[in-house]
Each structure stands twice: as structure tokens, then as C-alpha cells.
Image 1 (cartoon, rainbow, N blue to C red):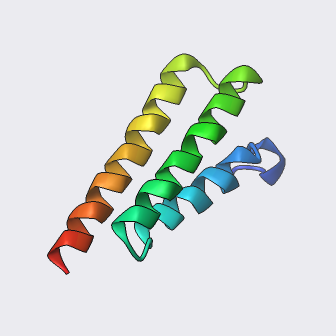
Image 2 (image 1 turned 90 degrees about the vertical axis):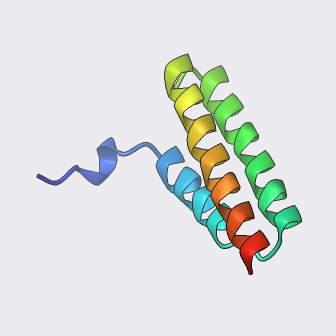
Length: 77
């Protein structure tokens, strides 16, 4: 089953880009900086009432877990 491109919110691409940025950050500091940028996206989506509070919380968890995973990877290098 495919989803029509017009039904996908533009923020999906932005959030995927931010998630990849965290996952491939070259340093712990850069990973943290990239994770901080996600707060702007989530806040903007909430203010525009594009996403619910539950969805915003889920996005925060997703980005936080990505950060923690990347930090663990960097520490083990």
C-alpha cells in the first residue's frame, strides 16, 4: 500500500533529516547540537497545531533515543 506524496506532511522530511544528522554526527557535541535543533521543529509543529501533544512527546523520545544511541557509539569508538 503506497501513500500519496501529497498526504505526507513536509515536516516528515525535515524530521528524517534531523534524525539522520544525529545518527551520523561526528562528535558528541555535534550530536547534541543537532538534537537541540529538533526542539525548534517540535515547538513549531505544536504551535501550528499540526501535531498533538502526544505526537510531540513521541518525537522528543525518538530524537532523545537517537542521541543516546549515537553518544554510546561515539564513546565506544
